[in-house]
Every structure is written in C-alpha cells, then in structure tokens.
Amino acid sequence: MDLLADALRVSGARGSLGTRVEAGETWGLWLDTFPGVALHVVTAGTLWLTVPGTRPRRMEAGDAVLLPAGTEHGLASEPGVMMGPCDRERADRARVVGGVVQLGAPPTQTTLMTLHYEQDPEISTPVITALEGSVHVAASERAYLDDTVRLLTRELAHPQIGTTAAVNSLIDLLLLQFVRAWLTTQPARPPTSWLGALRDPVVRDALECIHREPDRAWTTATLAAAIRVSRATLSRRFPAALGQTPGAYLTAWRIDLAVARLRDTDDTVEAVAAAVGYTSPHAFSRAFRRAHGLTPSEFRTDVRTAAHIGRRLPT
Image (cartoon, rainbow, N blue to C red; front, side, top):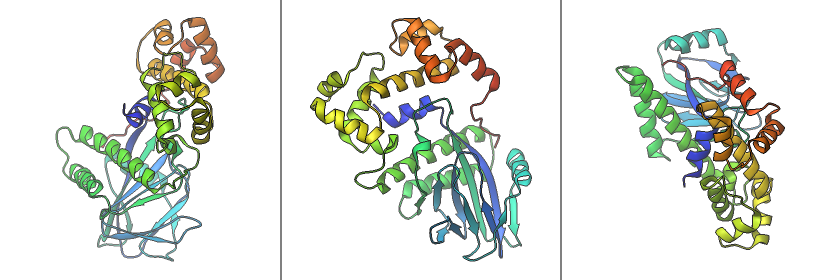
C-alpha cells in the first residue's frame, strides 16, 4: 500500500498556483504571512532566500524551496537588500488573471513562481502540516524535480487545451517530490510526526495494516502479530514515532476517513459508519461528535455549505 498517497487523498491536500514574479536590478520582498505551505521555484536567474535564524541562501535556476506554513522569509536580488512587504492586492489580482508581478527595474533577470499547499483542516492526520523546517533542493541534486519544473514553466508560458489540468497535476507532483526530499533530510531519529514515522519500518508496517483494513478491530496485540514483532516492541515504537497508541491512531484515522466520505460522497451515514469500522451508527455518531462537535449529518451540511476546503485557482 502507498501510505503517503492514501493519506494525501484523505487529507484533501491540494496545491494552487500562487504568484509569478519577474524581477530585475535591485529588489527585495519580505513575506510574513501566506496561505498554507509555500513552494518557491526559481525558473531563471538567481535570488537570495532569508529565513530568520539562518544565513541567506543563494538559489539558482531550477532550485526550489519548501517552507512550512507561517514561516516568515525574504526573497531578494542579493544579501543585505532592504526588503519591503508584499502587495497582497496586487499579487492576488495577478494570480486570478494569470498575470505576473514585476519587481525592481527592467530588464528581467530573475523569474520565479510560488505554489501554495493546504489540506482539509477537519482532517487530523498531519500530512503536509507535519513538515518542519525549510527544504531547499537544488536542480543538480534532483534531476526529476528539474524536469517537473520545466514542464510546469512550459505549460504556463504556452497555455492551450488542458493546461489547467496539466498545471494542477504538476503542482501535486511537486509536492510528492518535496515530501520525498524532506524525508531524506531527516535525522536517523526524526521528531515525532506522521511523515517521520514512515522511516520506522515497524511503525510503517503497522500503519499499512490500519490503512489497508480500517474496519478491522485491530488491537496492539493483533497488529504486532500481523507485522511479526512483539507487542512490547510495537507498544514502544508506535507512540515514540506518532505520539499516540495504535488504538488512538486507529480511532482518529477512522474519523478522518469518515470526514472524507462525508465531504466527497453521498453515502448514507449508516454506510459511512460501516465502511470505517463501526457496527453501530449510534456509536459512530457518538465518536464523530466527540471529535468534531457535530453529528455526521450536521458536519456534512456545514462542510458543503461553507466550502472551506481550499480550491484551486484558475491558471
């Protein structure tokens, strides 16, 4: 089973094209707020990235950096340049019409694009929100990343039939590639997180069992037997990696699956309850209300009318 693909699907993780920038001469931009996880891709020229507490980092054409949600940072033509705030209205206007934000003075020497990634806030499994620290990947280190960036740049430069679908698919592909890159940068014992847990084979095998059969009445003992480790080993390593017991994770994942079904399908509440492992709709409703403060039916109504899940913007 592809755990990452399964979790991304349920979490409603999706990306959208943010701002495209063309810059020349001396320029600087300070970003203190932005929606979700941000990915900056340099498509031509060079720039310097500054994150508080770290030294400025040079980025060249084909390089990209992924920044966790809420990370303040600056982009500039060179270190030490005065960086002004982002003109949000101007950036939003350019994004909606597919335009480009101009910085500095002609001629254009550097071009970059920003992508944003978010997940359904009602999903408790922290997939993209589990990323900690910026991840800088040079084009020379990941040839496949450079290939994807080139395809994305080409689609944006020459729109045609199917460009919107192609751009959205490439944006999602870039997220997967960066998650892989993030995993390779983590220490042997990464901090407690869902993504970090994928590096522990015992925990990963247990998660695969839960994700493959969420409706099964798993216990720590049956999970341990299924992956051929002792109960003591699983009881020690699972909480160390995820900060919760296998039983607690199973319950949370079942509720996440229910959220996705209520969000994406017209299945009855009874069908949703059975699909995620509850033999009694009443028990399911009670567990769902504990997690979200609403009955499943109330939640479905709210989530559809509020339309709070991040939507892709036209490209």
